Image (cartoon, rainbow, N blue to C red; front, side):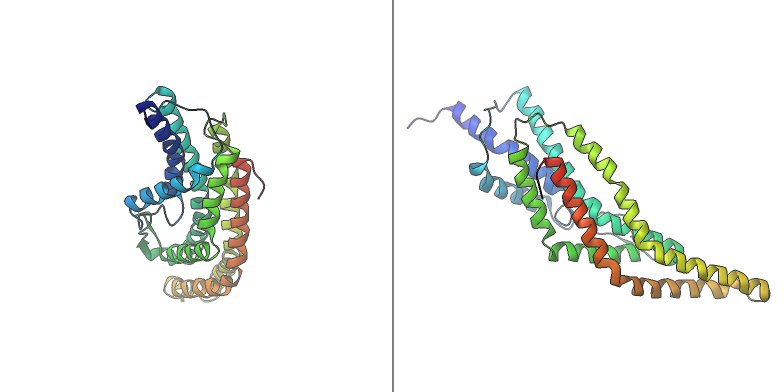
Length: 259
């Protein structure tokens, strides 16, 4: 059996285009797309998934590998994967924003740590919430759900589909409001409680001006913030489940399938 160069290039194109979408997806996927996982691991992981799913993908029009059309398709598939994976990143960043709001209100923002996943300096409370979200994301098989959805996207958005990537970007922009809404709702109890504490200090200052409000109020505010974080942790799981359901619905809406 003779195998020509044209057949080899066509076979390579059939694997490279799905690989581009999967590599872009794993590059921005939560946990796997962080600095804790090397680029070599993400490359091999994307390659292994590509080898498994290509035989069951719907047939598409053959594309010449070294052509302008194939270059445009590779960029388009990479962007689709990046957008789908970025939704999971927004899911975890929701609770980091909420933790930063609480930390700034209670004075806990002075304690900062370097986030090993992103390399940025974040409050210690934000790092604590990020670890909680990461553990819940893995326990609930959120990574498996996201991978299943991106594999399903090859059926609803084939390689040669005319799906506009800008529509997906617009959907993410409109969905970003949930990041700030959920973060604010999660921190609302702490904000209201700390406001009452600050008003109490103001009343104490008026009643007894000799009290140094900065020497007494700042430690009490920090202790009150820690107590409020401990009390409100019971409502952390419902907030996470709701935001995970919203992010899953967003991905299903972008790829045009039912969850």
